[in-house]
Image 1 (tube, rainbow, N blue to C red):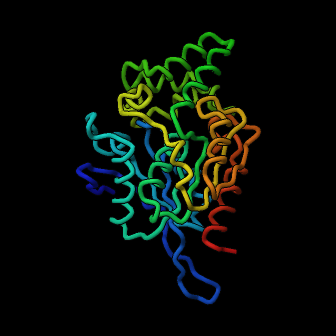
Image 2: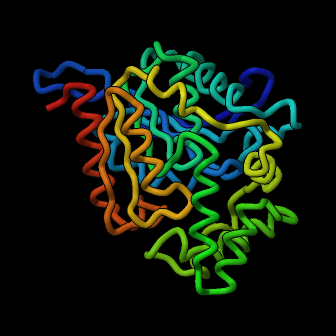
Image 3: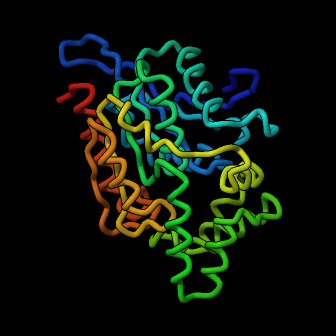
Length: 290
């Protein structure tokens, strides 16, 4: 489905029904979970299998961010964290929702924090998975990459960190080579197969990483976030190190931190059961479900 939001054509999906029968026979409205994909420059489709476990306790909405996936392309002045936040708010209102639970993974978590600061009254809860509050995360990632013994993996890590991507196909190949940095559950060949039919936008990713889309640093404002917040950090994450999750826990007042001890960046794959149970518990607590 498409909607025109703030001058841009945005593709979105409402993935399941919004009502569930109560024990007394009444239809009860489920809380709404908005899920934000990573990247930037990726798309929402890869998240869908990891959202199904929440269909019974939440209505799930996801979309391709502007400049990503099936949504409209962007020029430099048409992409910013603030614009992306306004797109979320516009889509929420377009669908007629009140307060939402917002879940962001990796870059999606960065965007979720920006949204929380821009539209604080629109949230009932916030879920931040393997993400970071500032560009300092790239400095830490560079230190990690410097210590890699595998020459090809080191070169691939710095290629991503420096945004040295020729085109969209080069981005796919680079992500495939970088697979061991991101997950223990998939081979580079399996990553490439999964990316075959995915729309990626290397320009959006390059411009964000390089800083050409502006400064990203929310640390000083995180104390303003006043909704219940679940932070999920991974012990083996190279691009959004656990120290970043701990920093968010320190700065966001109503937050809890759950550490994934056996994961790299992709906790959804590496510790799927723990990810599902952690998110379900949080949604139930926010919505006061038994």
